[in-house]
Image (cartoon, rainbow, N blue to C red; front, top):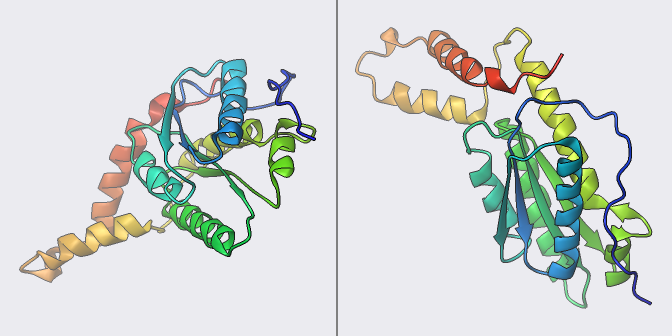
Length: 213
């Protein structure tokens, strides 16, 4: 027996209020009757919270979500990225390979630290379990992903307001190494000074994302 999908119920929330955040959502077309319901759940939350700057892009399947997220975290002033997909177990190991691929891919991207990536991919044993979580008996995981995106965007802002420790992302380290390898005199290069200058510029550029007081 199939569960009829329904719109996300509006309810009072204690979510943080952000000033003009920008969210991006990558949606897999595979199992679209599920993923579109999850997308709608996420959009309902953003609409309820008054956020209008939402980028939505579709990709063929769940495996492609990793690449989509990798591109989306480089969007200027992005606050958070959500990946939405649905993988239902079949009679072959394909289910396990797809789940492992997207899980590991998103986890690796989150270590970069450019922007939080929220995992909104359903991995279920059957279609009914997916329907139950896409607006059915167990709520809408897309809506939950949107709420998590708002909270993580707020978390990012709170961290950026703290004094910077000597910790660097992989991209910053790779960029510094590339520049270091082009120098004729290695003694002239100071990584910490170069990083501090770049971080100050990045911090100033994100000042418009401050929370309402």
